[in-house]
Image (tube, rainbow, N blue to C red; front, side, top):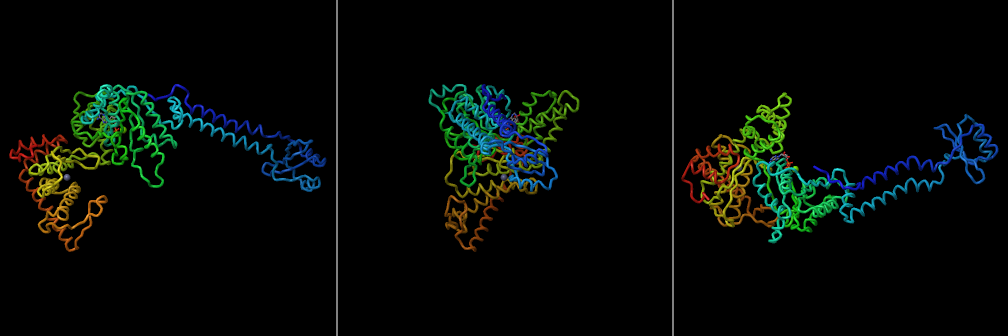
Length: 618
Ligand code: ADP
Ligand code: MG
Ligand code: ZN
């Protein structure tokens, strides 16, 4: 990474010189300039001077055992110093000579001058310097801006890397994300082609995903693939800066980028500046200013010039909605934790840079590291190489990898990211339970994807169903099927393991909500019919309304809700019992692959039990 340093001497260079010069002046030159010459005399001479009436003022300092005094010579004051003599008569002697006896004699001439020079001058110089810097910062001279800003914070740099040295070759797996980024690469290659036809590419794309999944790496790879400059700055760098610097820096970043177009501007950890703005007192003004400036710049510049803004975050939910509006970061690219194949590929990519035995089984390592991120895997390879060196070998062996998996995983196990094989098995059956119940019912949305790769949300796996058409109405059967599908996960755990886990909490919540809505809002229960038992006074506040019935009725509602969920649960169990062969086969397959598509699922299901309702094989 090459740091962007302006060719001229940076501003802080001068500032530091000025500061050092001032300090030196203050410490050595000013005091001696100001100090009057003090003559040392003997005590004897001092007494003589008193008697001759030439002494003007006397002061005694017991700490240093000295007496300082002044004597008038014409209209000039002379300064003297002498040692203290144990002399009881001194006071009366001074009295009779009419000498003023003071606590201290100013040995520095003209206190006002002193004050001006040693205090006001430095302040004036600093103020002037500050003004000068601000001017240079604001006048928009590209060189000057960079210079002035370097003053802000040593590590708040703008990086220009003509070549990041990374390509998509260095990024394993993440095919969906890569595909989305390929369009950006193409745009950077031929901005004119897009401009000619009048097409506007999104100005910004947001890479979203857990830490260590290769978001930064991918942004660099885009720059490398497109062969364009790469301006990168981390969100936290903005916040660390002086007040007003963040906004100025954003301005500078974009003005530089526009000159270098086509290029990529990459804002890492954008959540640090892009957090939701609030009106709470004591909000971070600096951050808000920076964010506002970023929004302004994004709106202001012309995307057709070929500046693409990428940003990365692992907390998309905390971003200010203004950042996600059209014309800003309106495209989201999800980067998830890698599945088995992804992990195998990542291990292979990183193994390229170490000497590794031909016989190493990457898949076995990948299998043992479910839940690990790309960064974890890169770390595993490196740890293995370190171990090989410790073992005085010149090549990495399988044993090194296995050992380092344990080291690295033990570190992560605490973070709960890596799931034990036993738990993984339960999760696989749970998810297939959902999917099978969904598939075996009519009026149920087709299964789109099943995965047991843990999600950022904390979910250990999920089954995604997608309707071909958007639905605005839900029939009673659909509602009941949905509940049955939700209970399918737990039902599978019961059927296969004879025990139940906490993994169904979210399913339970959703199933209950649907069942309750059926009773109190949709008039879908035989017990009550079309009676509204709940009113929702403020639809924006919450989904749950207030019950508008007697507590007696409320108790009956509860019973009805329980009955509905229970009926569906029974049905889910029934379905899984009837399809136990398919359940095992599919779960084992999912366990093997970690992610399977809806088509794969349907194909396998058809192989096992050919009598699936036609409606679901979509
Ligand atoms: P993030 O920005 O998402 O936190 P990084 O891009 O900083 O993650 O990834 C850290 C390191 O992990 C990378 O430098 C790379 O070595 C490794 N890594 C992560 N994901 C991948 C991947 N998909 N392929 C290859 N290496 C990866
Ligand atoms: Mg990163
Ligand atoms: Zn579930």
